[in-house]
Length: 156
Image (cartoon, rainbow, N blue to C red):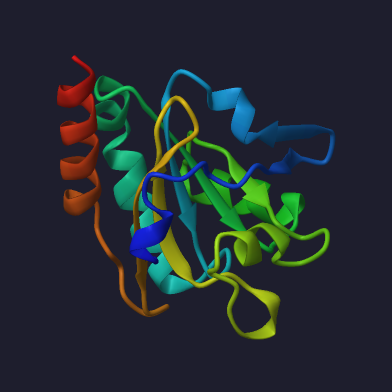
């Protein structure tokens, strides 16, 4: 992520989380939001990364942060994927047009899919942190939790 993006207003988005429901950045005003862009449902690295995220949901909640995953897969694929992994956070479909939100966050990859990236947006919609890693690398959650701890402590 470009250092110049930190401190700027995050790009607005509205994406489907089910065939009949949409989620937008504004839905998370007043609470930190973690955006996890990933290559595809069923990608081995995505499976590991999102399972780690699920296991750490109590820590994210304690730090006042919500999580959403974003890929270009359909809502039907997301539903099956989330059920199989037991995920309790929304997976949003960046499929219309494919990769439009990823492009806005400068993480659109080959074939229109998103690259593996994580962003933290504060409760006022300001970008506070971002990390882009190779598709085959699981960035883990330790660095992300450290960022959220700093934001939480600064707000207290």
